[in-house]
Length: 248
Image (cartoon, rainbow, N blue to C red; front, side, top):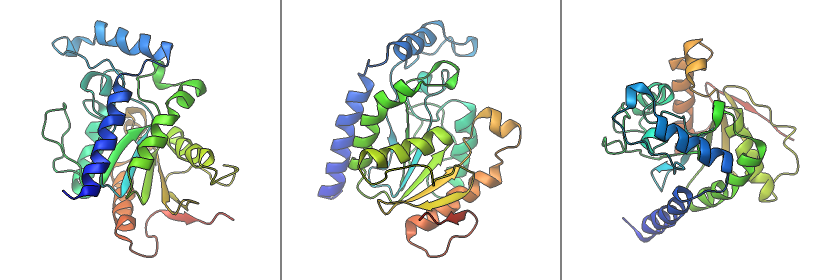
């Protein structure tokens, strides 16, 4: 590990400790702790995490995976993004096949899963009721996302899983003063944008149970997204499966 590797990891470790201790949003604090106390029957033997969920992955990643928020009985139970719920069971095998994960399964924090060249985070760090954080709650979490992206020095590709993740990255660029309006950036699965900060933003439907069970998002569709993100991270030219959109 070189000095930059260590500095990135130390910065992220400090940030994640702050995130885990956060109590900024009363509604989310109440909900995440209520779920952790009451539990789901299938997980009565679990000690739920019941706190904000920090980011996870390679501190030197070139690909940032940006989702919505922890699931009530997934990440809010396990303490790691996309771990222990249907979204993760769908996504991690894809990450494994496309070279971003060392194994296809993600069940708990000590299961041996490691990511290579990818880092996973979310627009909101606490499980929201109905999977719908309020605009105020998204804004309250935004400073954590800002600091996280700044600490991930090697990011070149942002894969936004769902519209909220997509908007979260656009709002990050607005806060940095790199964008005045989001109007030119339309969310759609497979759309690809060159962003003002030099990164590529790649949009995908969220791997929620609703999207995958209805066929709105298939395994092939998500695999194409991550194959493209791997290609872009390597610096290969000419977009392939997703469609590049020119923004003037």
